[in-house]
Amino acid sequence: MPQITLEHSPHFDGTDWRALALEIHQLCVDVVGATTQACKTRIVRCDDLIIADGDPAQAMVHCDLRILTGRTQDQKTALGEAVQAALLAGVKPYAVFWSCVRPVRMRRSQWTMA
Image 1 (cartoon, rainbow, N blue to C red):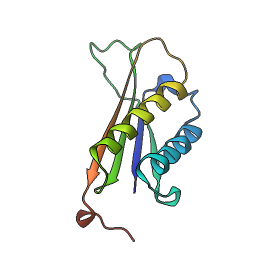
Image 2 (cartoon, one colour):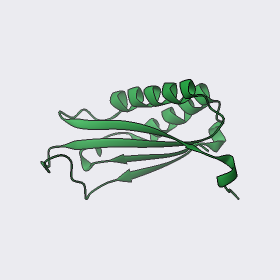
Image 3 (cartoon, one colour):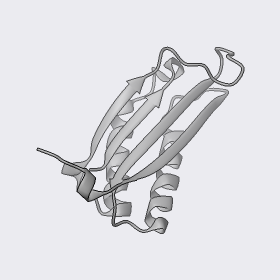
């Protein structure tokens, strides 16, 4: 934990997603006390995507941050803001796009890992 999912439209194929994921891992370490070894990121290119009125020029990046309970609301907010800033700085420039980050708490009692 954290389990991170980065979803993006094809408009951002030029983005260095590996570097961005590693930056987000470091933010998880710095902001919520995760360990680098615990960070896992899936990068998902979304080819079938409809945004707003369906104009194909619309683009998006979405990040889910699944973190275990025990973090304060201030930590979750700070992590969300830091990751949003990293996304805005790290994605390939594009004229019109949506970017959002969603921190999600996961209870330790509901998480199993081998």
